[in-house]
Image (cartoon, rainbow, N blue to C red; front, side):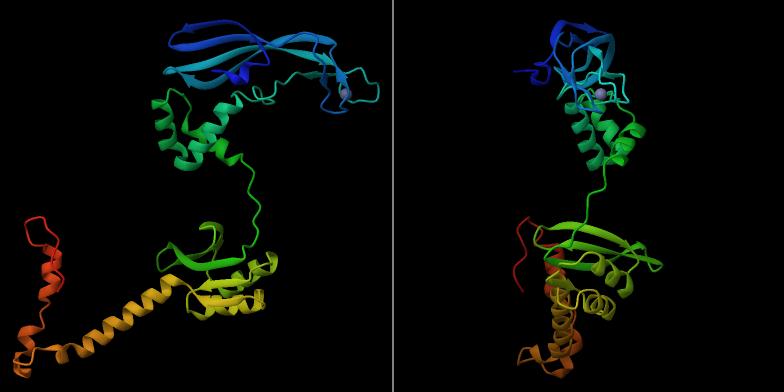
Length: 284
Ligand SMILES: [Zn+2]
């Protein structure tokens, strides 16, 4: 129940050594395993050797599993492999120094926090891993395959403001970043759409570059302005209209001569400072 990943091995000893919980275990004899090259099952023993696997911490202590595994012969004449090392499902990974349980945790922390912050968090969780190791685990992950979502959002973002821009592509339904492109031109966007077909709707800003790229790369897709840009445009229009109409909003008893006096933004000033007693400002 506590160590389900150890159920396939024989645990011989559990002890604490300098704050580390060490578990001594070995694999069972006589169990046949398939050769990784030809798949033929063999149980003929060549030798044994010990592996030291870091595992997830228990009770505030780091855990190390000292696991003795077998090296087995492959007796198939045609097979290029003469011997092979035993792997325990759920406990060992070929050439790995961590159990799959700990490895998953390290990758998750690395993806969320990267090197320095991840190593600091893991130290609190009693897992001693350097920032370099954490980064190398993240870099070793396979790059996820990119496919085009049904509703694709596109916008630019600054890699270096006023100098270098990139393009971010978003799955609008899943609220997830799909890809990031170096550059913010219509050509780059069109090339990406041609390589990743399938967009039915493209949400974009109202600049011409992405519109042109979408027309060339995915002519079948319907284009629409995204919500952020619509709200931004509405806000700008309302602001301009308010500026033009404001003199007409003067109370009837104040003549045009009072305009300069009224124009200072009293309601705005109130809303910024509040009422001073912790209650929200009243609506102007
Ligand atoms: Zn073989």
